[in-house]
Image 1 (cartoon, rainbow, N blue to C red):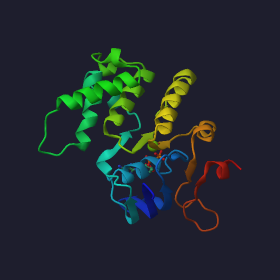
Image 2: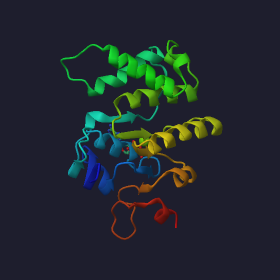
Image 3: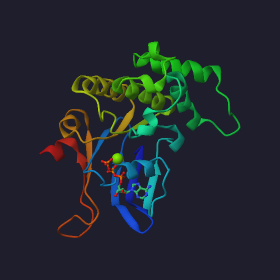
Length: 231
Ligand SMILES: Nc1ncnc2c1ncn2[C@@H]1O[C@H](COP(=O)(O)OP(=O)(O)OP(=O)(O)O)[C@@H](O)[C@H]1O
Ligand SMILES: [Mg+2]
């Protein structure tokens, strides 16, 4: 049974359609890499999957008991996040908020233990009380990944998790992500790193700009097994 299925889904901002008729399926344990040029709608698509945006047409189905609040999300890094005035622990534990009901505004001991366990599993427990804005790029991405893991039950979505990292930090983070996938988490990762997608991904979704297709004037979309894409 598919964990997630999109059928002919489009997203628009006002009258401007930025994602046009995308379909794909994700099974448990799949590793989907989303490729495409700047502005082709990758982040928009991700926000749609997270129910932060409503499709202008088409349908999104979730299976295997998956709920949007149980999807771990690591957003594309912005300057605002880099300057966020909080400790690493506060940033990571805030990942518990997504899955709690509105009647439980306080963190429990279990929430705290779970946040510490995520920090530990990513090798950054020692940074627990450090200010988030003082972290290096690689440490910051690990903290944001720990935050996303607080919510992730079956699916982790990352939007350009290695942007701005040096090759060593990139390799390290990819090692962590691959391990999470091997341990059973399905992954959707937006990336511009096609060489890396080739090594990690089981499936590729490549989206072009709407109106770019020379034949139909629509949006060029490839979805299939990674082996098929690279052949
Ligand atoms: N909140 C918004 N309101 C209006 N237009 C938006 C909004 N967010 C994104 N867009 C536009 O939608 C298009 C797709 O943006 P999106 O951020 O999804 O692209 P992307 O593929 O993630 O690009 P990048 O690789 O640069 O991250 C762009 O033309 C962008 O300007
Ligand atoms: Mg983006």
